[in-house]
Every structure is written in structure tokens, then in C-alpha cells.
Length: 496
Image 1 (cartoon, rainbow, N blue to C red):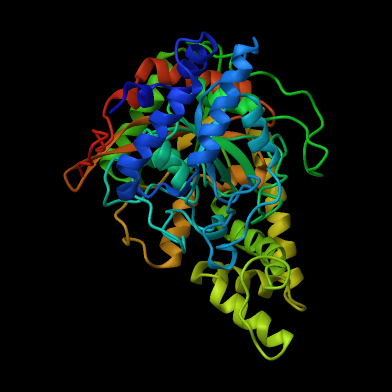
Image 2 (image 1 turned 90 degrees about the horizontal axis):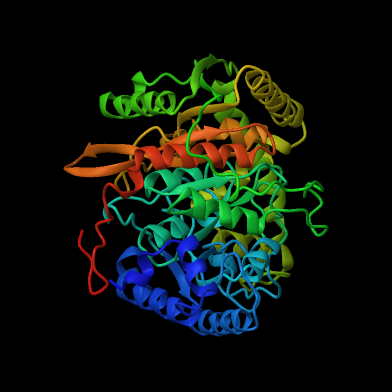
């Protein structure tokens, strides 16, 4: 494997800006890596050979003119629910299989402006609805740490690309845990920013009041650099926050002295099993050893998070996906009349999980049930947000597990309920709109495999600098990310 693909984003940017290596060399190495391993990993739906090389050439030209680019030459994966002008943007769905984006999402454009080079459009659960990346209609993505297991979802393709060294940064979207869970499953750092901190313009909507774009990376520093590049107000997004963004890459710290970290009473570790319980207990001790004081906090409405989310998100999904009717976007199925064409197009174009959520959401919004379900869910959401606000009066950050299990085998969770439970620890933070991340925190043995785990850290609104700074201190002290390499060990082949 070329040593160039092992480099992180910060190192690549330093070297390209210093002209020790060219962006084109980095791009060629990432493309070669994708050629070597992605047939088995399935991180990308499309590799963007020409666009990557053309973009890298332009980066080199900018550097030659004296520009200092924060992410110069950094190869990145773009989740395929984000528009990139002139590329197929499918949401991993048959209904958009042949749709070409006519513009570029703001967050993607900001990464390009910072010097990033797009290597490919990455796989996801269809319309970002899932926790394993198994709901894609267009391909299977496997976990680079064990090719028989899932990479997490819905941003599984971006996570797998970064873990497999096919990119240094992955762009993901997080509605109920879709950045944090794949980060935990693939031994990465994954950040869900404060809702509204990163523009959603050009992100194909799943649940508009919950969706948020964020980075996946192999280190906290790399995640901070990517977040700094993509964050900020965008007049094209009505939910974008018009306030100054505090830089995070320059606010990283090496200890946690003076910080109070809340441990949630309602998130006991015993149900996770002995190995995971031991790993998280050690993670909490590591936080203390770094100077933090641990305090118990209460989130009494957290147990209602799943029920609340699975009314609000499907309701918004039902409204957002009504536009995919075979007339304005994507594929259609010919029929004798418009009504039949709508029915046949949507029946053929949407997969089972998308249809399930549309039906749930349409029912929750229907006459006679709107007040009983959707309105009550919104009231519960308000209580969840109040619980977080109250908890943060007695602590600076909250720590919890990122997932309820290690990466599981492909096909192991075939019923919807067990899959929905995967988001138990991540959904409350999404409902509250607060920033949260997953950082590697240890390993669990299962089926003869050593599998990664993630520690979730949560901060108050707009406190990404504090959040990433604390994660950096924890990462530096524990070094879990470097303990084991993925099973993909050579560019010439794949070991599983």
C-alpha cells in the first residue's frame, strides 16, 4: 500500500502546501487504492477519476500561485445524498439512479474551496434511512475491519472509504446517528455539528429538522479541519445559523483539567454485556485521569427518544419524498394515466425501508391522528431538549456509549425494530440539536474478531471547539485508533 494513502488530512495539507508532494500524486494514490480494494469494500457507488484528477491539478495550480489551503490535496468521499455538479446523485435509490446533479451542495463546495479533492460518491442506506448501510438499492458496503460485518449507517460508505484508506475525509449526514454510528463501527472520529451550523443546501432531505452534515476522519485534528472548512452561515439554507463560527482546529487541547463530564443515569452499561461495559468503564476512568471530574446527570426523557424520533423523522420523510413522483426528478414508469404512473414509479423506485417510513409518516400526519401522534412527538422533543439544557447546567460535556453493540454481521438484524434500537444512544442528541461526536475508545472480541467501539461525547449548542478539544485530549492519551489496522492490509489485495 502506498504510504501516501496512510497520511491523514492535516499531514497531506501541510505537505501539499509546502510542495513536498503534489495534490495530483495524492489523488492518483487514492484512486489506485480504490481500484485495489473497493471491489470488496463497496465504499463508493462511483469513483470520480476525471473530476478527481482535474480538481487536483487545479489545487496544485492554486498552491503554485502562493495560496495556502487548509485542506490542500486532501482526498475526500462525498456521501451520495449530497449534490456535486455533473455527477450522478442517487441517494442509493432506484428512483434517482440516473439523476445528475445540476449544482453543488454548499458544504461540498466549501470543502472544494479549502483544497479537497473528491475521489467518489459514497454508498449509504437509501435516502439515509438505516443504521447499517444494508438498505442501499445500489450496492453492498462492508466494514474494512471485518468484511463480513456492516460499516454502520447511514453514512457507511464514507466511513468505509476513510477506514480503508480510499479517502482521508468522508462527508456524512446525521439525522439520528448516521455519522456517529459508522464512526464507532469503523474506528473513526465522526462529528454531528449543532443543527444549523453546517448548510443543508444541496443535501437531499430526509428529515429537515434533524438532518445535519458533518465529517468522518481518522483523527480529531482532521475532523476539526474539515468541520472548520464546511461550517458557517449560508443564505441558501433557511435553517442555517447566522452567527460566527469558533475555529476548532486551533483549539485542540491535551488534557481535560477543569471540565465536568456528565455520565447519564439513564444509560446504564450492564445491558451492553461484559466486554463493552468494561471498555466504557475504562473510557470513563481515562477521562478522569486526564483531569476531568465525572458527575451524574439525568436525561429522564431519553427513553422516549426512539418513539419520538420514529414519528417526527418519518413524518418529515413522507413530506420530503413526495416530490419524487416520476415527473420532476429521476426515473418513472409509464402508465395510462398520471395517478397510475405515480403509483408504479414510487412502488418500483423506493425500497422497503423507505416505503415503511413514508407509510408511518403519512399515517402520523393524517387527519384524526396528527394531534395524537405528530403533535405529541413534537412536545416530547421539547422535553428532551429541556433535559439537555438542564443537564448542561451541572456539566460541560456528556459522555456515553455511541452504539449498543460492536459492528454486527451482514444480515444479522433483519427486522426493523432491532435495527431502530441501534440508534438508542444517538437519537436524543439529534432531537435536542446539540453537537455530538464518536471517538475510538477500545475494542470488543466477537466471533474471533477484534471490533472497534466508540465513545460519544456531547456538548451544548455551538460548543464544537470544546467538544473537539476534549476528544483530542482523550484520543492522544488513549491512542485507540492506532491499536489495530483494518483487515485490508495491502493495496494489491484484501484480507478478511
